[in-house]
Image (cartoon, rainbow, N blue to C red; front, side, top):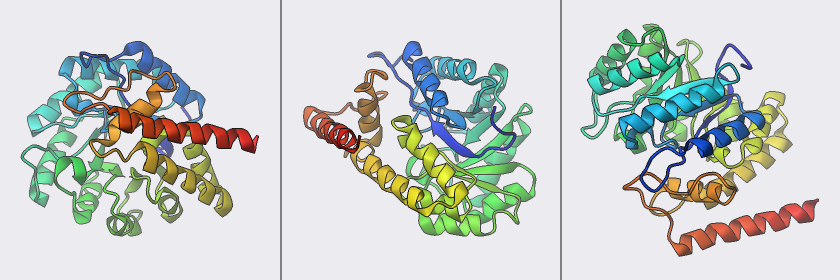
Length: 305
């Protein structure tokens, strides 16, 4: 393991599945190994990119066990426990602890979304009480949960000693800058989950990033983090331009962004490209668009060499 504190590039790893939405163990192991070899600092299993809440409990547990075996002692490993009620989340925390995880990541519950600070504090307080010795990371992703964790609530959880880290994935620059401006004073470190302003987030004080695009091209994100640490603005800007291109071409499909990412990975031999049902795989036109981007990308790389 590279460090005692969470920092750097933590990849929200995708979950390759077969036609019946069962975890493709060989593909997942191969993918995690390739990410670690690329120099990432951690793996986040069962998050949004990993489709954790979409898998059956049996397949979710299998996926987490595989990730644990591949990451154990090599990089930091975070596990997602997102679900629709406090008791369901607590059940997932217990399973995660039984596998041997050190960190669990939890969003506000969803389906019937929770909107108020007292509801958020009730949920996260219960998670803390049931943490089984693991460290809790609060995860703000309103696009998936339908609710936003207020900055004041984040700070209150840090003040109470419930969290040291939060993952911020709203892609709302104003929220991010408000959160991080007083985060250190609150005893809170921020992991940036978006890609549209990743470079700026690192320069402004994020301790690391959790970018879905790193599944496809981890080296670019590792270089971006290292450039930010050196304050190498030229290299950091170059990396941000590349991140923007990946975001625009692989993470912007009209139906669901996961379809584009998983299809692009399948062209490199990682999984079938299928998202978990009811999410729909790309149609022929969408596949062709990504294929064209990848072909153009390959031509430009050859020209540079």
